[in-house]
Length: 112
Image (cartoon, rainbow, N blue to C red):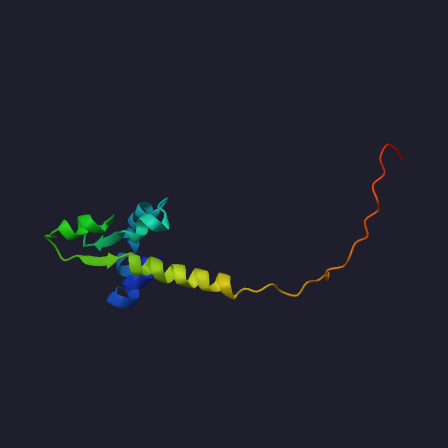
C-alpha cells in the first residue's frame, strides 16, 4: 500500500486509473521480507506492475514509458515510523503496585 501511496503523492496517479492492476503488485510483494523489498524497485508501465531487483532495473532499458519507484526509501520511512512508536511507548500505570511477599521456610520430609 505504501507503493500505491507513493504513486498518488509523487506522481499524481489516480488510484482508479490503475486500481485494477494492484493485484499484480500485491502478488509480487506477498511473502517477501522487508530486507528483500529494500533491494527492489517497482517498474510500472501501461501493461504491468513489476517488482525487480535494483541491479536488474538499472540494466533494463524500457521500450515504453515506465515509472521507476525505488522501494528502499519507502521501507526506511515505514521502519522509522514503526520503531518510533515502539520507543515512545513507556510502561503505563501499574494497576497492582509491587508488594513484598513473605516466604515460608521450606520443610523437608513432612507431608500435609
